[in-house]
Length: 196
Image (tube, rainbow, N blue to C red):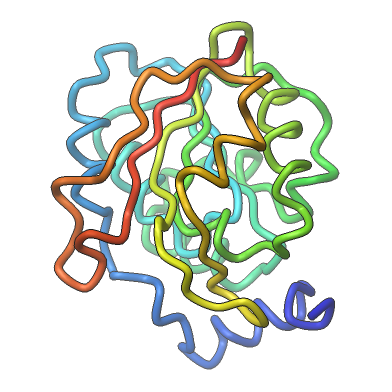
């Protein structure tokens, strides 16, 4: 399991184009969410960003303060090639769990939570809480589906996830996603959680 979560493991997946979770574009639920944001100066972090189609979309829409973090260098390189206007200093090569506390207004969840070891889930929400400003938001998609137990993507249930964040975040939206892509229909949960 540890090997599967290493930088080398994930980087090799990108080098070999072995990333079936990547739909090749921004997901419709996040696109619709981003399209209603008016403040283009928000400090936004996308951890475990992979090819970061969400970051590319935001930057092309004029957002000026977008950061991405990934363990693997290859997807960050892919993003910079596709989106040369992405500030190189906003590309963070490293472990999300080792990021220093920063003041982000918004953190985006898109297939990162399902890629980390299940025993890190409580730590995930504590780190999200530490990285957000007061009243900052954690927004995105998680799988409400058992999926895999031994290798990523790891599944789970919306009821389980609530146990991890109940003392850290208030729920703004926490419901079945109505506009998932077809292969993920009835399996995704849209979250909009506000730091307490």
